[in-house]
Length: 484
Ligand SMILES: COc1cc(-c2[o+]c3cc(O)cc([O-])c3cc2O[C@@H]2O[C@H](CO)[C@H](O)[C@H](O)[C@H]2O)cc(OC)c1O
Ligand SMILES: O=c1ccn([C@@H]2O[C@H](COP(=O)(O)OP(=O)(O)O)[C@@H](O)[C@H]2O)c(=O)[nH]1
Image (cartoon, rainbow, N blue to C red):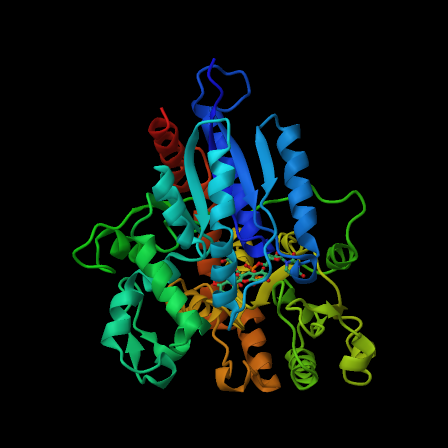
């Protein structure tokens, strides 16, 4: 029997992009096994993961562990998954986050070409990170279908598809623009709510325009969203309203792509604490892999939480050391106002390290989530029906926050002062937390109701006949067929 064709994944190796790409790969293998008539437990497909690894100085501590776990998990489940490290490159010169990620991916193009050419298996398709569209040149040269795996919302995708035209329509920097931007399928988006790299027409912005253009060349775009969460935006993309007059690649909505580990034998301290709290009584605050605040903001948060009167679990991280984007464990005694821990000890827990966020959001004691609106965190919250208070910080999070409030209705708005480094006043946090958590709040009730609907949509989507499972099957069938 011929060996199965392989799908090559080329992720950007940071947790928020790597984990969902590895997980979607695993789901593709599972979906192929479902289609396999042999029933022998194998899959009609294998995976080859090409790792363009950041040097240790820039690598998040959890990345090696993520790779180790997926390697072990793949061999346990009988799937054929091979990891291949591409030769290391000197870090590129860069002038911002998107510039860095895009150049870093570009630097590995020739290594990726060599590695793919040397594979013994037939290659069914290559799946690229959303910042890796420069590698579409490689897939074209090799005559292979190149897909993009889009780790964020359909709304961000619609913005990127529309950006090349929007760039021509709007002469000034978007941060100078008054009024709103028309993104088909969304209510008018105030210019101030656009993603950070779009605000100023610098090199990071240029990369967004570049990727937006190149997405049109992909064989398909795989999106980590749920069709039922963003129906209007997806319809607008499919109808060609984002790029009039051109055929948009097929869109596969396969989310929520979340990976869960079995809980540890001894529950984590945060979970033990939650076990002692009443149902839906705790507001959880956590700000992603890169979120941290300076001392004045920490004081405002402490004050706002205390005044809200609600129970809280607050992941408080310290500022990153120079040259790293990753927060440190916080020195809680130094950062918090005097007497805060003592005064709130019956109601709150401040956790200064990486927290088991997925387990926390799944806990029945959690009633709301103050979040930076990273898309993985958002999906984890909606998967559990937890309503949100958005506190966007970087990347595309301001647009996510807008969509959560204005389109999905699963969140209660909070005023975040983008011009003051996303500062939130204590009184505003107090108001938003009360609005989200108080039984009597109409706004909170609506958000809770919508979050419960979103939970049902997420769970239905991944059932056997759900929209995401069907999209995944279609995708894998297409890949397998094209390799025959
Ligand atoms: C989507 O737009 C951007 C994403 C990122 C980005 O960068 C990043 C860098 C790291 O060193 C570690 C990370 O984990 C990481 C993650 C990351 O994106 C996150 O991706 C999620 C899924 O797409 C999610 O949506 C989060 O909001 C993102 O933070 C960086 C960037 O510019 C620098 C982007 O424009
Ligand atoms: O203390 C923390 C902080 C973050 N996360 C996880 O890190 C990911 C963050 O991804 P997201 O897309 O939300 O934001 P990013 O960190 O990439 O900006 C999510 O899976 C979170 O569950 C976690 O487990 N513990």
